[in-house]
Length: 493
Figure: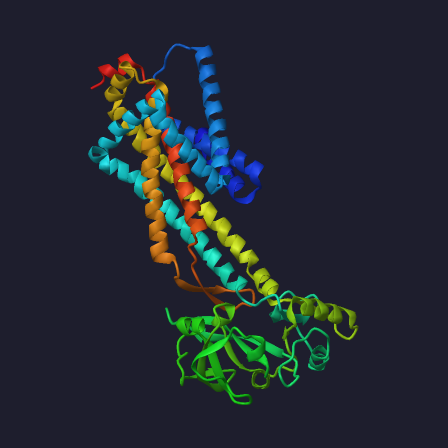
């Protein structure tokens, strides 16, 4: 019981260190995970027959196992942090070693023999492929969700548009800007102006409303934004794709494409009851960012409906990056304005940082737990393969195959299966999840619609995870095959 508990604690602590700590502690976490896997494997295989005590041999065995664990942990740490150039260099080195050296050619010949017997072991081999494909698919999908959410927020705004909030406010929901401050902002240097000389400035309100989800009919929070007369000029990425813009003073709404896909009754011409008032949907807009999840209307009409006497934020188009710096300095220097200024790009990027980190950590932890299961599947399959081919391996060693070619052959066979599983998992993740539209609760407690983004970097990480699992799952069966006594193995049936 104590041994089981120790194995479980080692695996749990190792996963925590790999997921939540910096690189030096992550390497120690990898060592703990590897040690836990070895301990679990030893317990699973059961006790060995009692033999006369051999202290020196046991000491050397423990030292060898410890050295193997340390080397494996270091190798996994290097492999995880290795860039694609390093991986390519390793692949080229192995590709050159196999045909150009005697040991390499022997390893290549042994690998061909092992691969040719795979059709006879397709059931057991598929355990490795399917297990690793599941790990990679889940890991890539989880990380793609976080990357898609962050990409949506990162694409919102730019470095020349400022968002003004009350001093100390972290989001629009807890910001209050009085109406008398708006004209003051329009007179500051750095503010861009239209052809008539009017400042490109939009006083805005944000109201959280309940809408009906198109997927399951439940109530979902959505952001109902009121924008000023210059809102369309300030948010120049927003464009009407159906219908028309709302008219100031009327209870008319334009909805984002993302909101239309997530909520019911968002078609042009439909009516909604919000704030005990009837609103008409008159248009659909597209922006390709977080605003796609919102409903827009005239800010004064929204303020009247919800009895709001102040604004929450001011969006200001500035005269380029120098204009933004000039505007920010002017706001800071005016004692009448206790306001904070930052670019809209920086503001929205900051809003998604915590959730993206949480999703990444959660995806890594789930992937690590599944990876341990895949490693056990690979170990079980390859140990069974080595046992089945015991006489074959012993015969190869008897006719001149040394330990290194045998270890390499078993490792190459496992890594090949892991690569197939990794490619399968990446393909499933890309085909099923890339571009898949979902929504989550943002920092303003309303739904943010975004799409999964399966990037080449995530696919590359998934393949590295697959090959790492293959490395761990194939190393110890390969070492056992190399240590197998020739005379004992030849007598096995």
